[in-house]
Length: 423
Image (cartoon, rainbow, N blue to C red):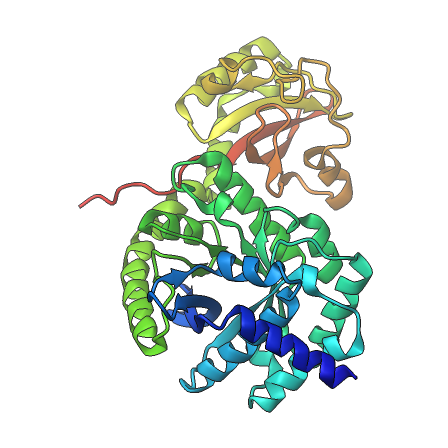
């Protein structure tokens, strides 16, 4: 009975597509760090047998969806892609799309892909399954299907992250190996500081969850370089190569483009790191100079604040300076850089007034924890400026008690990382 049903479905697919020739197309995914083609995403294109006109994937799936045959068409595309890809004997991975709304929890459905890849002579560990942004019928079915495919050896890829149903919930459900970041986030990222901040957050999220980020839809050299500077090494899009059927030609095109990107990226990386990374030695050198200029033993905060005010104006990397007592209470005004002083007041991010309690901050608790006299914090979001900074805290002896000098160094200014290279 099951084989009869399958035969009927095949006949229906053939009937729908009788005037359309289905051809697998591929698009290279490069690893800019290694300089190699990491994978190819398999796509499908249709061509009218009568007119020769291309039929888009959206039109193809609309045709099969109208007959409730999307799942069968999905499987047909996977079979054609494997067959076509095998002829080229590529050493790269192959990514194939999985329409999440087609997933069933039936055993036969879960085993279809492992059986198919084995029949075609592929090891599942060279295949990445891309779960697109369509809604799953149920979380239970999705989790069960993904578990089966992962146990079979497939790589699990979340496609179009940041769009539709491809969201944080999906990451929680399927624990992907690779997160493909949606084009909506990547588009114009070299000019958009907000998109850059979002991308950095996704990169950090992927690292904390054991995944790798892939930027899809890069269309310009500037987008490629910006994504790479922000920590994304896997890239896919028109800036590298458009989808095509000829894998050998695609590989040559991708490698040539990648060599160009790598040469320019190296120059930008040096410049970017110099501007955005403040070394611990630099921070301590600046702090030592400042400490020599102030007389903390006299407890004259007005005179000390005057020195701090002059100091912060001439040091562009410093955002805030303030002094705490041995209980973590702020005993000085918070001296801030001009760009912070001129910002409108914010309920969330604002300069604390004298008397504020900092006793739970790591730049205060570190002294009790480690019995040290100096501590440089990890990168954190400054409650005074709303920027990412690191705080250097130095324990200074006063006349009758000790004080803690706190200096907030700007760690990463939220700005476009790409600048013209000087000739």
